Amino acid sequence: MSGQNLIENCAECSSGWKNFQLLTKSEMLLINQNRYEATFKPGEVMLKQGSPTSNALFLADGMAKLYMEGLKGKNFIMSIGLPGMLIMGPGAYVNSRHTYSVAAITTVHACFISFEIFKQLVRVNGEFAESMIEDISSKSLKTQIRMVNLAQKRMSGRLAEVLLYFSNEVFNNDEYDMILSRQELGEMTSMAKECVVRILKELEDSGVIYSDSSKIKILDKERLIEISDKG
Amino acid sequence: MSGQNLIENCAECSSGWKNFQLLTKSEMLLINQNRYEATFKPGEVMLKQGSPTSNALFLADGMAKLYMEGLKGKNFIMSIGLPGMLIMGPGAYVNSRHTYSVAAITTVHACFISFEIFKQLVRVNGEFAESMIEDISSKSLKTQIRMVNLAQKRMSGRLAEVLLYFSNEVFNNDEYDMILSRQELGEMTSMAKECVVRILKELEDSGVIYSDSSKIKILDKERLIEISDKG
DNA sequence: ATCTTATCATGATAAATATCAATTATTAGA
DNA sequence: TCTAATAATTGATATTTATCATGATAAGAT
Image 1 (cartoon, rainbow over the protein chains, first blue to last red):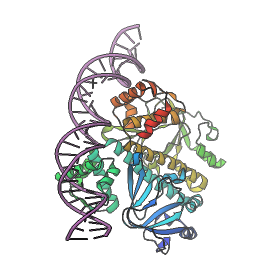
Image 2 (cartoon, protein in one colour):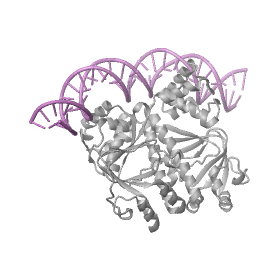
Image 3 (cartoon, protein in one colour):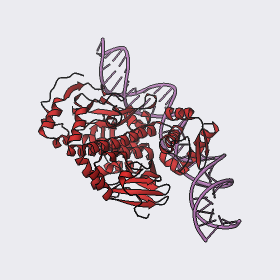
Image 4 (cartoon, each protein chain N blue to C red):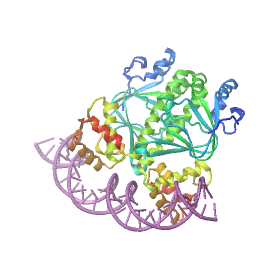
């Protein structure tokens, strides 16, 4: 991790959070004055679960995994952090502790913004507050849906769901690099790594996907959606 | 369900939402003018998943189950709704649809408050907006923790967790009426009803709880917490 | 290039959980 | 109170998933 500012200012940042558009010029300036940048190498931990939520995090580029550290050292990967996303757990407004850890998957260029400034703007700018609620709500909704799926789907359904997640929400492409290891895919779907391997193979054998250890190609999306939906 | 106003006004309602205290008198009046009451019998559906979020819901008294309707008609019970809670899913700020259904467990006297009014107040009153974010965040945090537990704990851990939930958050008592059927306990812990029965029996046999079909008594809380924590 | 280490893959087995079938309470109505 | 319906319970069995052991590949380091 190294920290020199490469981004001129937030207003012109191509990876900026869309909700910042609701801020006035002076509010935007405030944000810009209370941020710092840092670069992380793959694998480096960017935010640690349990640590104080002094900053909100944005990625200028690269990808990160957001994961909760659960029982017996087992992790649970909740989602992939991407440029343009506000990365701030619900703990910020509950106990001032990060709810989850964040670790770089690729090289990540990140921007930390003072959470106090955030809070301040929420109180002052109603539109911004509303957009903040929308952002939090949207994440909460995803978590709820994820929870039910986790509770009700069997392994193949859960894995299909995650493969679609990468296609639709991470890469916007039916062919993509599998940036997670089998172990990590398991941590995302609540399955053992061996089972991930087996189900990927099943999906490949039945012509739904092509898969090698580092690439996924969705060949029959209809079918994959069906597998995900039926559970 | 019948609807005549039994509550004089929100400001003096003993089951009122604590965040309403942040509103001015005139704002409170606005709330009070845009609400209606209704009484539900046990089992009646109060809010239906997918329907428009035209109102936020409060319980004046009684209990309700908040549940998502998932795959193959299987429900997933997320939590128990109680007096004093704002019952409004994240969908309100995402797609204007209720994320979950709510059904009365006991006889419930409920209060519906126009969601438009809510939104309006959020934009105008910064403190209220912040308290709203706190409320949503707190629910989101609970969902996340629940999700990880669901993903990582085995049956006995999940059931122990729910028994503690009833004790600590619903009844504030180590002895309580089990208001959910075995089937419903299964819908809350993602287990088959037969397994609920078996694990309750195990817990009883090992002296951790007393249990009959309608009552639970926690005899060894330490141990129950341990079972919940270890998964 | 070669060594080392981590990941991936596969079969065999064990453990956890769900389903099925049948029986016994309980509860709600008539 | 009696009866019908619903929920709880139990045992047997099937299914799903995890673990263990081991070898094969791939990726990094020297």
